[in-house]
Image (cartoon, rainbow, N blue to C red; front, top):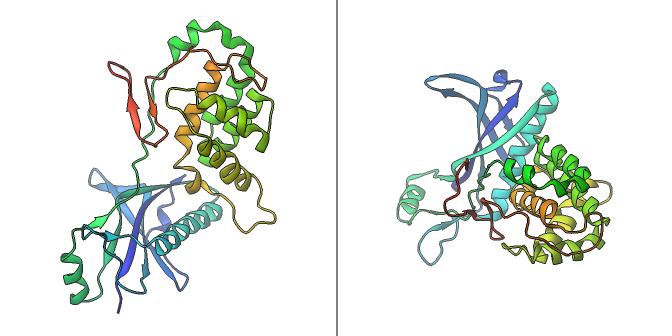
Length: 291
């Protein structure tokens, strides 16, 4: 008997789907069970706890510090099944769905005393994921004083569409439309001017980031015809806040709107945001920041 890798998330459905609590999904590889949740010691019909587990082929590896490394392929199988079940419920009930990770988001379930002793002898689990925190602050003063934004009300309209999307893949589509509008270019030809422009910003967004957005995310998020691979929200999530920040940088700081020009002006410097290493930052003495 070999231990199991366990992945835990919460599902949020709108409207609530409390009737799906204590459901079991087993495809022969991953077993997923849903459970009810509570809030302030009372039943909470808005969310379900989902626990997915998969049997491992052997003991996971240890790194040089004696911490247990999370096996990548089983983890991805768990996350795909978690998303599959959320989608099944969403389509079945014709409702919106959101998936949120708990913390810790992964664990190991020993199947016997020997495996328990082995886990106890390690220095814990090596968590490599980063916390993705969305940072909010008002841009009222920036919009009020910058009347020159009147030449790009079309760009503001597309960003408003992006902010109205509750699903991250929808946001990605709108941000890509925004970049296309700003530079009058689409798809691969957009990569060079957009990356050249963003590399001049304070956080120096790299060309590799822009290639990731346009080639690795946009294309398979838009088309699902011939290739086996396509993009879902979980693929977009690690990148969306940096993409959003890039969009605001283009809106304010691109001198010539609706052109391939990469000329910049320093009209806007964010009070907070996400760096090109996906780590959040707050400018000293900034106020009105929420997380």
